[in-house]
Length: 185
Image (cartoon, rainbow, N blue to C red; front, side, top):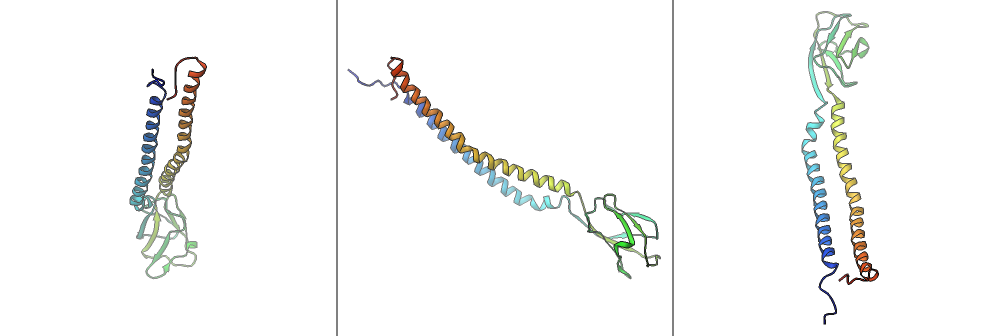
């Protein structure tokens, strides 16, 4: 006469625990590799991202006459980067011209400089800084999302463990209260 039956709740619980361990291992590896590969990729392309909105223009030739408006080759000039100069007078004070950064238009209005057939030059930085900022913010957001998923992973694992334990407890009580022959082991 056998006292214990071979059937029971252990077979299902063992499979669920093995699945849980494998799932946690795979999720952890995915998070580690996603973070590491994403960080390495960002390190490789960071110089390219920084160049999206930063283009330098040096010694662009300008023909400035008193009261006339001239257009630079590029628009979206970064604030405070325009320097206008020539060989004889050096750097021209910014009070001697008006400049619209978004359109690249310069109107020459000298206070005390005589305007002749003098070639002027411009140095400036131009480009869409908003695009560069958007790309960087998108990458930062992806890293923050990865970190947040990693923060919640232990809670998900705990919930699955509680579910398994409750399943085993219900299996025990089903045999006792139901009057059947179910056993936990």
